[in-house]
Amino acid sequence: MADRHADDIAAQRGRLTQLEHDLDMVGKRHRFEELQRVAAEPDLWNDTERAREVTTELSRVESAVKRFDGLVEQLDDLEVLAELANEEDDASSAAEVTSGLAQVSAELDRLEVVTMLGGEYDSSDAIVSVHAGEGGVDAMDWAQMLQRMYLRWAEQRGFDAEVFDQSYGEEAGLKSTTFEVRGPDAYGWLNVEHGVHRLVRISPFDSQARRQTSFALVDVVPSMPEVETDVEVPDEDIRVDVYRSSGPGGQSVNTTDSAVRITHLPTGLVVSCQNEKSQHQNKAVALRVLKVKLAELERQKRAEELDDIRGGVQNVGFGSQIRSYVLHPYQMVKDLRSEHETGNVQAVLDGDLDGLLEAELRRRVRDAEAGED
Image 1 (cartoon, helix red, strand yellow):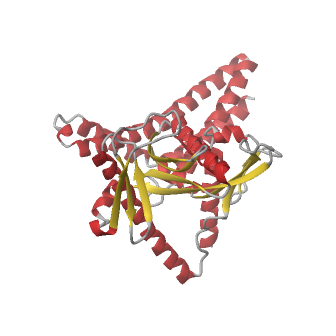
Image 2 (tube, rainbow, N blue to C red):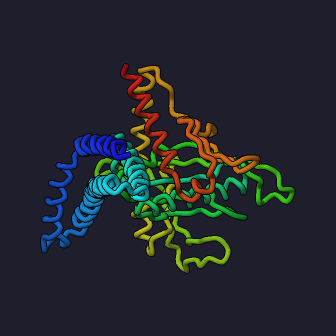
Image 3 (cartoon, rainbow, N blue to C red):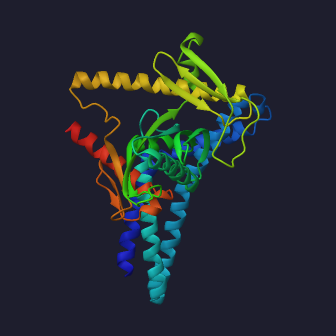
């Protein structure tokens, strides 16, 4: 028992040492100290934008350092407990060590996935849009279920989320919604969700209780405040409409036309915001989201041009699902790219997405490595 624990503890320490290098924990600690000094400057809040950037980065770096140090401390405690269990031949303590090592190993698995988030924008926050597709009112209900799933995932991770716009269906659900998720590597995690999501269930809106297949499109782009200086949007290229914010029956509505819808005429992109209190604030948020989406369109265009040159496969478009959520006649969520599946559909819909996200990230790394061979 003791020898097995000693070997397991040594193995986990080896993984920690490798992760300390891969995650540049030395650099993070130096950056944390530097940000603490900057945050303590008495005149920091004279520039509110800079102050927000500093405090946001400080929070993220502090979280990363505490997470790593917590694992080191947990492993130290388990090593002491393993020695005591061996000396006293305590089966209960030995079982506690085994359980603790399993928890440490699972957390190290998650940290190893973080090392895969090295894309240009992976560290950015994410702007997520969900659009109801084929399936009528069921598809609108499905869009709202997906929004709830992502917001619950963000909440469980301690991320902040802000809903910018919701276009409600006439009977139920959402025609579309746009929200921002703010947290460490939010875009790196959520960009794997980009694509069509398929739901199969007995329709709660069908009086004959027939099975219904519904689709919703999830669009994810990185949130980049600096994009405002990179993307020009001439006034003549946009149409700005104002309207009264509204919600489903029973929900209060604004008494002024403060909601804003911006249409980018050259591309047809439409962005709305009704979350802020004033028309000016809603327009500013909508314009920022529009610029982010335009920047993403330009990146996609360049990527497609490179794919053409290399003879690669184009991005999967609407109508080809990346994941299926089946509630009837059996219970299963299956990602069609990574082949990862789970029978606990309700847990996934309640925000337990990490297994699916990690499996797809690992698949992408494997495919990239295979392509280099």
